[in-house]
Each structure stands twice: as C-alpha cells, then as structure tokens.
Image 1 (cartoon, rainbow, N blue to C red):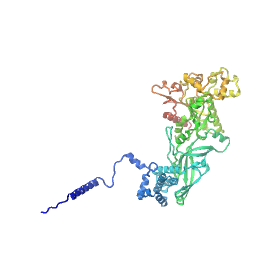
Image 2: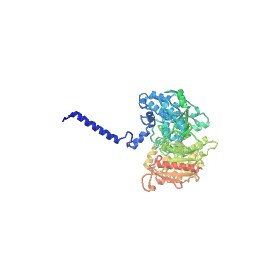
Image 3: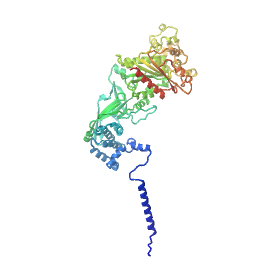
Image 4: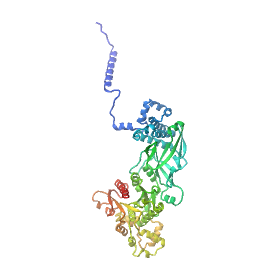
Length: 616
C-alpha cells in the first residue's frame, strides 16, 4: 500500500481556506446585500435634514440626484465643469436639477468665496420655486425643499450682494454684477424705497448678527433678505416736519429685500439676467407672490430692534438723566418707533424713575411680533428727566400728546388717535394717572392758601405753573395700565436715601429759576419728595378719582411667598401699588423692574386684545 504524504504547509493552507469559506457562508447568511441597521433617531433625522446651509455637504435631495447620474466624484474633482454642464442641459420642468444647482452653486461659492456663485445659487433657488412642474403639484409648499430653497435664495442673495458701495442704498443699489455664465442687472423703482413720507436708506443685512438682551428672538422663515433700514424725511412743509420731529435719526426699521427675476431660465441661457428689487416693510407686508404661489417673507424684527438699541444715545436717559435734571431729551419727549400710521391705536410707554425707554424692549418685541396686535397698534415712547417734579413731567406728557395729535391729524379724521393706551411703570404710572384725572385745585391747595389767580407771578412763570398744577382728563386716552406704580408713595423714598439723592439731583436752569420765584410757597417740590408716602401731592393724587369713562388696569409686582398684602417689590409695597376700582389687577412675582417678566408681557398682550375687542 502506497502512502501519500501531504506537506505540512499545504495542509495549513487548506485549513485556512476552509475556515474562510465557512466564515463567508456564515456572513452571507446573516447580512443580505440590501437590508437595514438600527440607528439613533437623532442622527438619522440629522442626516435626512442636512443641507449645505448647515454642513459642508449638500442635502440628501441633491446627493440623490448626483448618485442617480453617477456624478458624485466628478463634482469633487471638477465642480465648475459639472455645474456648467448641468446648467446647459437644464430644462424648465426638471425641478430636481434646479434645486441641486442652487445648492451646489452655494456650496462651491462657500469653498471658493466667489460672489458670482452665490448669486447663481439665488437664481436657481428662485427658478425652483417658480418652476412649472412644482406649480403643478397639489400642495407645492408641502415639498420640504421649498423652505430650504427660500433659505438658499436668501443666503445666496445676501452674500452675493454684500459689497461696499458708495451710495446710501448700499447693497440694493442699481448695478450690474458678474455671474458664472454672464451678468445680472439689478434695478429698482425709486418708489420702492419710499415709506410714507420717508425714504429708506442705508440697508444693514441682519444675517450675521445674534441678539442679546431680549427674552425672545422672533424670525418668520420665508423668502427675502432681512435688513434694518434707516429713514430720511422726504420733501418739506409742516406735515413732513411734524412727522419727522418725533422719529429719532438713529431709528432702524425692519424690512425685507426681494429680487424678482424675469424669465430666469431663458435669461440664464442668454447670459443676461434682469432682477427687480422690491423692499417690503415688516409692518406692511408679510408675504410675496412668486409665479402664482404665495410665499411668506423672511422677517427678523427682533434683530432690527436689538441693532437699533445697540449704543443708541436716545435710549440713554436712565440714571444719568435722573442725576442731571438739565439733560436734554429728544424733541418734546415723545418718540415714535415707526412713522405714523393712520388707523393704528397709539400705545404710549412711560418709563419710571432713573429708568429709560429701553426698559420696554421686551414688551415692544412681543407686541410687534404678535400677529393680532402688530397691525392694530403703533408704539410710542415718552422719555423725560425723572428727577423733575412729577407734575411738571406729567404736564409735558399731556402737552406732547396734544401736540402730536394736532400735528398728525389736524382735520380730526383718525379716531384711533383718540383711543390711546398709556402704560406707565413706577413713576411713569403716576404720569399716566394724571392723564385721566381731573385734579381741580387739589395740587395748588397743597402749596398755597392763596387762590392761584391772586398770586403775583410773571406771565411765563404763571403759565408754566398753571400747566403743572391743574390737570383735566385727556380726551385722547381711553385706557391706562399701571405697573408697579406707587399710588400711595414708595416706601424706599424716605430717610437717609432721600437725603443723599436730593444732594445728587440737579434741576434745569429754567425750572430752578421758576422754583426760585415760588420757593417761598413750596421749597421742597422735587420728584423724590413727590413720591414720599404721606406727602401732600401723593395724598391728593391718591384721592383723585379716575375719569369714569377710562378703563384702568394694574400689574403689581411682589417678591417672595406669603400673603401679598404684606409684600413689596423691593421699592413699592403692594398696599401702595394696589388701586381699588380697576378693571383688573394682575399679581406678578417679580422685582420692581418687571417689564421683561413673562407674566407681565402676557398680561399686556391680554389687555391690548381686550382694548381691540372693546372697539368693535
């Protein structure tokens, strides 16, 4: 018998081959060529919603088109050639490719920093939104690519237009810009930059700013470039001067720029695209029509508000304005956040002691972004030197309200101007109360046993004193809101603090001169003494009833737990802020500076809605 000997090395190779075959069979049995694997839902959703706007890769929609055509590697190796080829073979009904071109051009623009690629992305995003095939669907806006295409348009247009330009219009100037396949001619009608009696100038893109200091940032997603615009009065004459004297030169208003392209795909093929610039103010329009489809406009009112508040001197009237009674205020103290709009009810916000108009920022932000309120109200601010006597400041508020209505509505046609809501915080609440109070001779009786008409004073001093001492209910104000208002005085304005503050406060020369003439009558008439509990002015004001046809509300701040009757907000006790007979009283757990408290804001919105309902 012959025995065959197998070499040891060959035997080892055979065993390895056998094991490999067994492993292959096992793996094949466990994992099919097509199947699924478990994935973290957050990671899975992130991959499905990814786009070039949030990543260095395009969206799943664009990647799918590239894979379907076997173009993934080619885009990475020669992107410009591929983009040009996709562009030249594009048809008007191939909306999948339109979207991909928009995203790929934006991606390439980010990698190369070529402005013309950003503009091309905006063009193709617009073409996708206006494509015939997409318009033919039952619910075109249900396509998840629609909001993404609007964002591609916005970012592409913003980055493509953001260049230094010598004209006031800046990025929205008439000009011709280069494209990867020709040129883009931008033009606008001068009327597009007109807003009432103002001209919109110096447009600031808001895409690169984040907001601080506001409780919420409101942004309406949509199409268009959100901007902050400055204003310049147009023309001349009494009406123009009246409208502009209460609008600060540093005012910024939120607008959205939208460029409408004519026959975009045909124009791209010809190498010459024409675009018409439109400008929409946030308080005038919230949508725009693109090829028969209504799309929301991108709005960013919160960023515009924060940008305006950044370092603006007109808002800096807090402690410096309190310590310096001679510090100037803007105009007559009444500041409009938007040019006058007929038919919108004014809401006048009056700050408190050592405070400033910026303390209302959160309430302004919330009201301007409430769809049920923003087109029905116009927000005005009253700023004043809070170290002045309350009666003097209230007289100036009363005169400013009369003056603004006389200037804006001399023919008495706008009924909304006579349904004002005045909201006052702290000392500002006392000013608001004096707008709806008939004082009679109460305040004068506190300072002199002699009848006013018998006092011998120079005519200018007499007129100033009459305005400060005698109040009648303003027919312009139909509702007031008191916030942390010391109707019976502030318990903190006594003793040592009062003595120190009296030494720091200065009155303007004109008031000091008037006070010197009447000093023998009441030498201690100051705003601090005005608010001291038990002081004659506070007693007289507290005893003066509100006009019966005025609706009043109280928002009272208290700190800590327990019975609110014994609580305070750090400056004003509940017993002082409480007022009998008001339509509503809302207790807010807050310190004295309560305007940004969410419960305060909710109550303000509720009151304003109630005011609208009462007009129906």
